[in-house]
Image 1 (tube, rainbow, N blue to C red):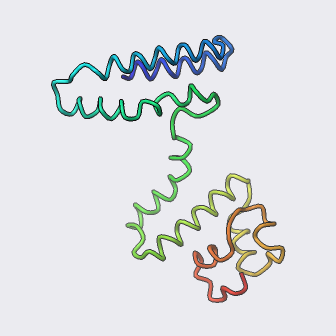
Image 2: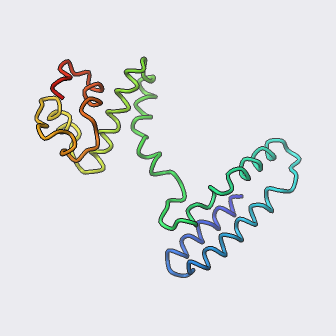
Image 3: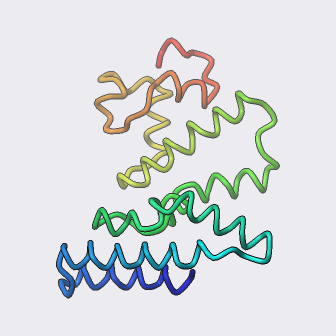
Length: 162
């Protein structure tokens, strides 16, 4: 299975380098999908291997999506990286003790990450938001965050100001 996935990644790279045409990509992808069925269909003697084979077959359309849509990442490492800071905080602090705390952390992590992606200071943004200096409203701040969510997250006493 690992060789099959590596072949898919190699095919993606060759297509990106212009070595394989769009038609060639489709043909090669079909061959990879046929190889997947050859791996999955013979009955497995080990129950765990059979479960894995059934799982792979159930998700066969998802395995090579990155070959159907060039430019799409083959893995979810970007998403994993995006949530890493929040996961570390949860593990260090033992998680949120309440649903309100979980919601607050979720909103703060979203604001923090969005500011980071836009090259902005999350501290400055939140400071301005709490001081009411967002007179134009959050929509004009360039961040897609609702003032009410930020107020809940920061446990602001004067939520009307946001």
